[in-house]
Image 1: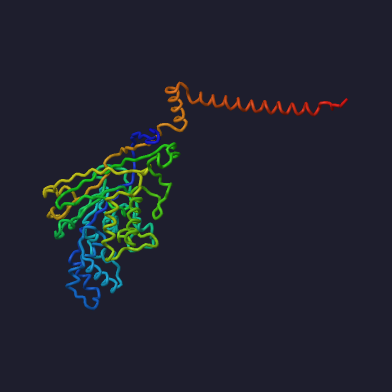
Image 2: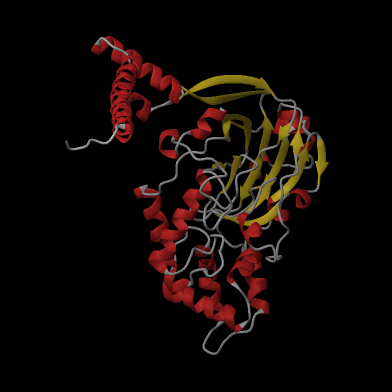
Length: 431
């Protein structure tokens, strides 16, 4: 029973890594539309009969509800906005991307490993599991499932580093001059995660307070397994290998993709469609306004009930993020070129993401004992509790078998010899 309950154990190892992929950085703007963008949008579209500009200006912001669970909306008004978009041959995704704060507007300056770079060259606007955000050095499942979805540049992992420390990472100067409305949705936030994790999965982030520096130290710890673990069944192993039991919709992946697929299956079964920020497998469609409430409720139900059977991944790297924040001061702004020409530090935020250590901690999963060792252990238990070992039992079985076999063989030989004697006996004559 001990072998069945937990036949493996973890061994902690430590190694020094000279080069590794830089973490993925996702920066999300406020879930609101700037007024000047709404006005420019309303100036260009054609108005269907019965629709007026003041009314559309009042309800346009509800389009953000398609990609964020934090936005309240009216189903009837959102359906009217959908009708206006169809009247102008527009889709929801491109319209929302146009109305939200872009990466060029949100990211004032970017510095990569002590060199100033153009933010628009390393950050790309992308639909994520938490809304429409700017991503750096990450992967998108939407583009891998639909390569022809060419409205945006395909993100890819291509940034690596061999140096550690804040001076050799990524530094961002973020614009914080927006008007504050609802405190629940008018803030920017950032997420640091492993570069091989898809941005389509929802994850926790950190709010960016104006006038603060936010330092994110990134490290990883990995899980590996010995060759003997491969022979165990998934029930005994209690983890999943990438190559086994591939997901139906997604490539063979870890627990995040398994959970995402489970959420999508439940949503499709309950509502007949998927949330607009879900990647769309063939044959499925995004929910429209009248089904949006159902899709929202389905996603919350999956995360709260935890009925998805998604074991941990046997071989995977996981991130350790340590965050520190402290307020900026005017007299410190001149020491770093990132603050050049910034007069009011309370209108900006600074994000510094960097690799914190060369060392990588890893855990290797080993087997307590193989089937041969298990057999030997059971033999020892027989010897202690029953006064004999398994080998003794085998010897008794062999002796019994040989005894029975030899007796049967002796009987067959005797019968055969009797038959031979009977055939050679001379015939008897009556006198």
